Length: 222
Ligand code: DC
Image (cartoon, rainbow, N blue to C red; front, side):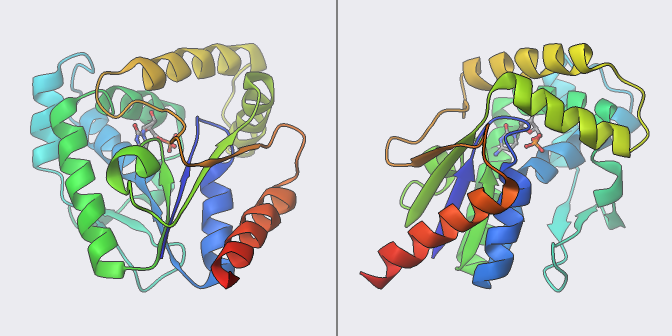
C-alpha cells in the first residue's frame, strides 16, 4: 500500500506523514530530505544556485541513502549521516533551487520509485508524489494551510533551532518558494486530481493525523 501526502512548505505534511506511517506500521519516505541533501552538497561546494549544470553534476555524484533500520529513517549523503544538517535556512534555500533542475528531478523520481518497489508499503511525502512518482497510489492526500499559518509554524520551528529571523521574512520566503514550487515546468506542486484535500489551517496535528488514518482504515475495510 502506498499513501502519498503532498503539499506546500510548512503545511505540516512531513510530520503528519511520519506519524501516519508510524501508527499504521508502514515505512516513511521524506522526499524533501533528498532534495535538501543535494542542497547541502551544493552549499558545501559553494555552487552558484542558478547554475543548473553544476547542480546536476553535484546531484549525480551525491549518493543518497536512508537507514531503513531506524525510524524515522536517517538520510545518508555519500556515507555521512546528515539529517541534523537539513533543517536550516541555507539548506532550505539551496533545496528550492535544486528542485528546479529537470535532470535532478528525473534522478530523484527514479530513486523514489525504486524505494517504493523495494519497500512496497509506505507513506511518502513531497510535492509530486501523487502526481508523478506514484500516480497509482491507493491513497492520496493534499495537505495545505494558509500562508500566514505556514509562516507561523516555520517561525516556531526556526526559533527552536535558535535561528534569528523575523516572521515577515519567513512569510516572504514562503510566498517566493510557493511560486517557485508551483510554476516550475517539471514536477510542479499541484493537488493530484484524485487526492483528498485537507486544509490544516485550523486543525491540530493530531486532528490531521486521525483524519487521514480514519479515511485509510474506512476505505481499506470496504
Ligand atoms: O518539503 P521540504 O521543504 O523539505 O522540501 C525541500 C525542497 O524540495 C522544497 O524546495 C521543495 C522541494 N521538493 C520537491 O520539489 N519535490 C519533492 N517531492 C519534495 C521536495
